[in-house]
Length: 146
Image (cartoon, rainbow, N blue to C red):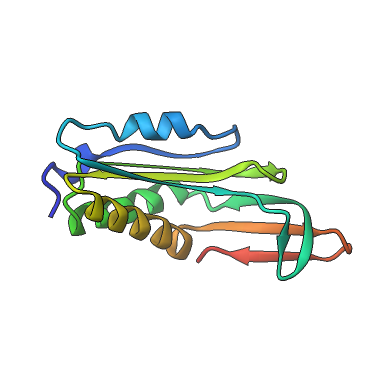
């Protein structure tokens, strides 16, 4: 359904140990044919399951970028996307750090919201990234994204 070829609409794909930039992701999805841009930013929160989180780390399978690109290609096929971008952190993160930033631009806002929602939901469900949370009570938890 993409109005631009799937390869052309995927403007930024990244899994990195360095801090993420909302401006970089927003800039990547700029398109003269887009009337709407939806952006999602996931941050490290200070609690989960009613427990205080001290810090967390993300790790990823070596195929992570290939799998992320496949998710993005599916979103581009299902929505009239002008541009997509997605970056995810790996390594040790602190409370408040950006963990993931995704964006979609489309001709209209409803499509941009829907495409962005699908992108983050499918990323969390299908891309091989795992979260290791360390709690204040000394316990920890592994959370698999897929």
